[in-house]
Image 1 (cartoon, rainbow, N blue to C red):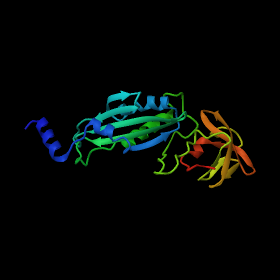
Image 2: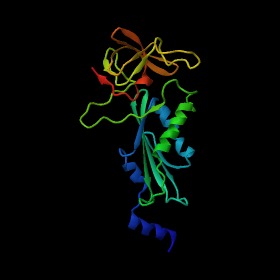
Image 3: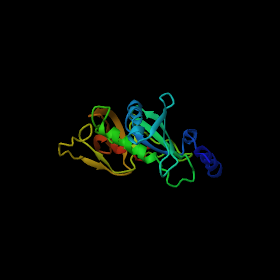
Length: 235
């Protein structure tokens, strides 16, 4: 029997996936939020398949889709990968990656979801296309809100004069922007979990976003990167 015949027989018995199955799997993959504009994330995400030894098969900026695949190896019938790049704000971009085995029963097939996102993180953190590393956290896990719950607050898009309740201890700085790594800068205070902050002003320094906030008698600057991953609640 020819190789093509073997594949058809295995597909009929074991079940096969195609590149389209990976695309249709949107919403079931692994996603992360990156603290970078969509254009920057899109440019770097298009380089990741080559970094991982995948073959790019389709890219569509209008739909935010990147599709790639891995061919047959000694251990796998191959895999299909679809990445979805979606802006979540002026400085926040979500990337979801869906990986599908070409043959469902192939236990040796590789899942490319985390490797893709990890490699994208490395590219963004190294500043390969944006003139050097940025001062704020490049990537953070940011789960969706539970059904029936209000949408999660975007830590890079807080509203001026709005009040928010912190869910973690958060450093309060005396100056705007991330601390200079070459200096011995320390936070002036630590705002405790449950503290309510009022946002007075937003500014950027060394490529990072910060907010001048007040909490009780305390006034200072909070880095947006320190708010990533918090379950911020509006008050």
